[in-house]
Amino acid sequence: MSDHFDLIVIGAGSGGLAAAKRAASYGARVAIVEGDRVGGTCVIRGCVPKKLMVYGSAVRHQLSDAASYGWSLGESCHDSSVLLSKVRAEVDRLNQLHIGFLEKAGVQLLSGWGRLADDRTISVQDSSGVETHRLTAERILIAVGGRPHRPEIPGAELGWVSDDMFELQQFPKEVVVVGAGFIACEFACILNGLGVKVTQLVRGDHLLRGFDRECGLAVQEAMEAEGIEVRLAHSPAAIEGQPEDLTVVTQSGERIACNGVLLATGRRPFLAGLNLEAAGVAVEGHRIPVDADQRTNVPHIYAVGDVTDRINLTPVAIDEGRALADTIWGNKPRQVDHDLVAAAVFSQPELSSVGLSEEAAIKRFGSDGVKVHRARFRPMSQALPARDPKVLLKLVLEAATGKVVGCHMVGEHAAEIIQMAAIAVGMGATKADFDRTMALHPTISEEFVTLPN
Image 1: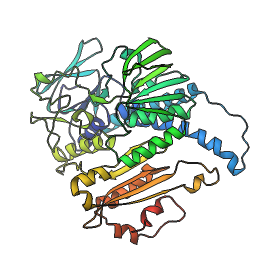
Image 2: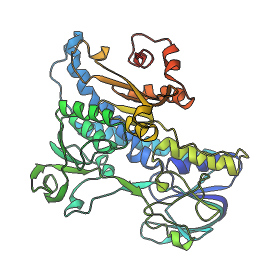
Image 3: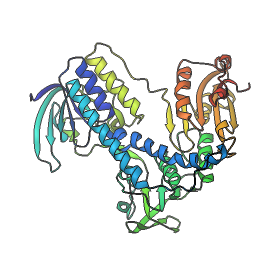
Image 4: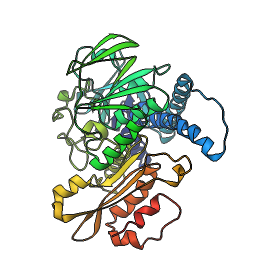
């Protein structure tokens, strides 16, 4: 194996894989260094296994609704060990697929942890810190992603982070989830759907900060209706006990007994061990700052994805990696547009949005410069079971032009629907454009084009 490359990528997650394969397709000599399994957070311990668990937990509703449609199913029970085992098997399959994709693309994969020896040299080390390879490159890409952050409280090591949830052999009877973000809400719903008693501790006064607040409240109401105990203005002060027999002590002194604690308290870029100072790469807080071309302060060293802590979503990292390769080796210079990115929370019900929340729109245009159209209704799929939650659809407009600056939904298939709405919002569609679109009936999404003026 040659020890000099056009591009060395540190990290085989979504952004790193995308950049490596795209650069290699243009004829660049590429190596990628990864100390963990190939696939990164999304494939190994994030989007993919989590969504499989969401599907598994949603079966409970399908079973409970069956009688409304004339199905007699009898008694049912769930074995979480079976679901967890099958999810891990699927992750293993995808890991091998991604290794094969790299080989097919002509990318050299090196197993080990990449560490900068200088601004053009990468030391590849095994888990004990012994150097196994030393490589040089014309350009280096840092795409190491992020890691869960544990709060600094006594006993934090007794709790799980999101990575740990996929390695459990089975879920316990009672779990405390700490956090208000999408990871906390998604796992609270997954666990609840699989029969686990869930208490969610939220430091602030609402869930899902950064999303439209009305939508976050709709998700919270639905979660509470399903039996999840959401405690606002509650923070853990300590975790005590032994595995499977824990007590969360809150800052107010309350003691909550449980069998496990999920600390879903945010993620941070994974900078440990990179030795960035050896290459002169600047760090800002916990992140690597980059310009619009993914370039760090060192002109031939780049960073993409969660390590830059801009918009930490898989499709964003992928596009950043591809844009980098297109620009440098494909003679197709382009920059990623971070201004209009759709996002989803795979809670139950789902929340998805693109553009400005109502609060962000008011901040930009003023309260008189914003107009909101909304619909709240029970979807047809829940008519015979006669159950909630109701769907919420919401368009946020710039009043002066009628332009749709935000599109939000809480309900089944929200992410699938908002993906299509994002095209219209990205093209600058107005409420009149939505109104001119013929409805497809009977669907949930037709309400977006039939909202009254």
